[in-house]
Image (cartoon, rainbow, N blue to C red; front, side, top):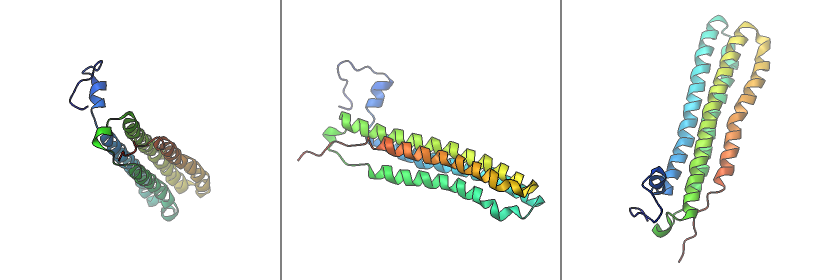
Length: 182
């Protein structure tokens, strides 16, 4: 099928996308899930860490208890690693004649969509947790009674990443490859 034009097919983007192997889409989805999740975690740690270091100059007591915000940001990267492992287990080999079968295309697109959903949900989650963690460190330096109140908000922000993981797992359930014929 690749390299030959079928009747009714045009030389457009959709035609070009149909010529890309479903395994390529799957690999891209897995890479996006882990790569963008780690980017979100790093960005959140950067935001939280810089505020934490700055606020610790005024109130050194906040350093150890505000490290929980950094741990919440790191959890975002772990979500991406877990989903990448789950998506990797969804890959199965199929005969060359069935690579472009509708079932193979659906499986490849499902893994790709799952990776995009998880990656970008975790990117936003890392930013959310980082900004709230920054606010938590600065507020705690001024008034220590605010720490627990802001930490609860940070926990709710961290749940955004879990929602992305759940949706990604549901999406990847659609990834079923064609059965091998003997």
